[in-house]
Length: 201
Image 1 (cartoon, helix red, strand yellow):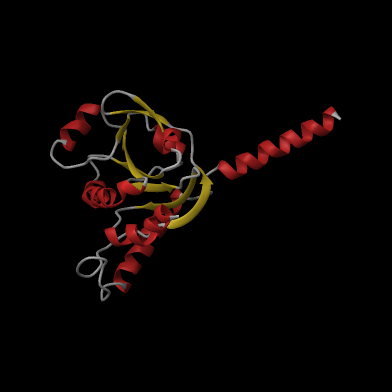
Image 2 (cartoon, rainbow, N blue to C red; image 1 turned 180 degrees about the vertical axis):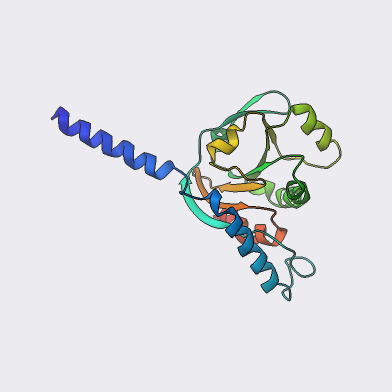
């Protein structure tokens, strides 16, 4: 009987590991995602965007399905925060850095989208990758960002999401499942097209 329970326990553990692990090759597909985004941008050159003008270049989110990793980092106030504390909200995790031009270019777009949906139980967590708090604070003083920023000096966020390209973003639904992922700069149109439906669920 004990042997049977041991086998069942092992199987459950294996199944859980399979469910919680990020898809194999997710981030190595970054270049492919960017190319898809470029193609999509050309296809939409004659299509009006949500608010104005033709759609600009953008990465295209792809659907994924894995459990959000456990992650604990420090915010700009020096306080520890955990990703699991946001369970019940839709969370967009954005890995970025001040030295990364496409990262900086998409920050105003993320801020605008955040302002549009914050009242719907949506939050963006910007995780600065491997920089000192002073560097991040100095840059943030030049722009307007009101969503949470976490400091990740050791690259723990990148390891947790198996992501080593910037910028990279992941959308976690209210149940704690990562539903969307993309590598590269994103547009407001793509956020509304792909992230808004997750928020509305």
